[in-house]
Length: 375
Image 1 (tube, rainbow, N blue to C red):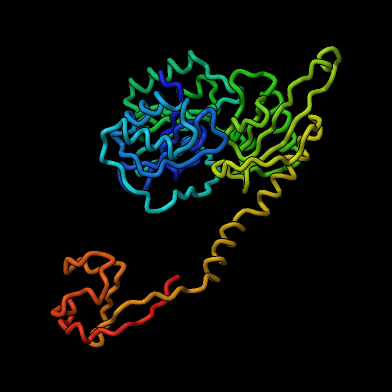
Image 2: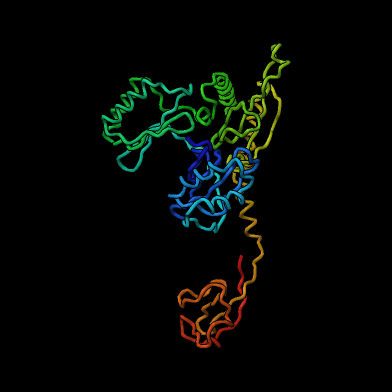
């Protein structure tokens, strides 16, 4: 059994946590290659492995890290050791940094059309407990009716794919006979709670009821309730931490206190944990969360606008190339000329005297130095 927690995810989704493991493999734009984000148990900060990992090497890389991780202090040291231990030449140089897009939490519930003649079904339980007898009967029903596959989600729900048009009426009858509700308020669904924790479930109900009474929208936000103060153990936009009871307070009837935290830009993938309020009473939580929800909608989209304006204001950089006077073809020393088997970083002066423009055939003397603008 692995001692380290391993995640293998796609950055273009927001249903499954990306950076909540010790070894986080994140899909790159290069097919079959993965970024590796590492946060070993004794490290304070995560770091990226300096090369992309080939799909078929993931198992051997994880095993090698398992053997040495407790003695590794940084990613450079780990990289050097793994290069000695592993006989793999499939790694790729990272050409661009991993960019994680901000995606709002999806509304995965109910019967939804998939293509022209198929559907998928999302089911959620309000009490966060699956009815095992129902699950057994449901799996049997899916097998008997050749219904696709069942996928468990981290959000106390599951998704059924590949429901044919002909099977839909029978499936709806099956759910109805067992009193299964396939539509809930979105306020209830975007929560991460500790497993089998009645106290956390009651706190969630209390907060959801307040949201409902105040007619507050939380669309796109996710909430977590945690007893691990400061450990960022929940992949959610906003985290309500319950503070531990002190030894003195155990002898008295003292009300618990809570911290309200959130991630930068309300995006858990930033991994920048911010404290909004500390040591507050349960009665103060609804108003604090409502304020944070309003802040989220106020800043929504502003970050992208700032980045766009920053790009617009970027001063163009000049770049020297050589251009053919006849057809305006450019020879860029940084690129070379692959069409003529000329390698990158080959100086123009180093080209043979019989060099000709590969488009119009003009002599080398017909080229002139030109500055072009690059952003």
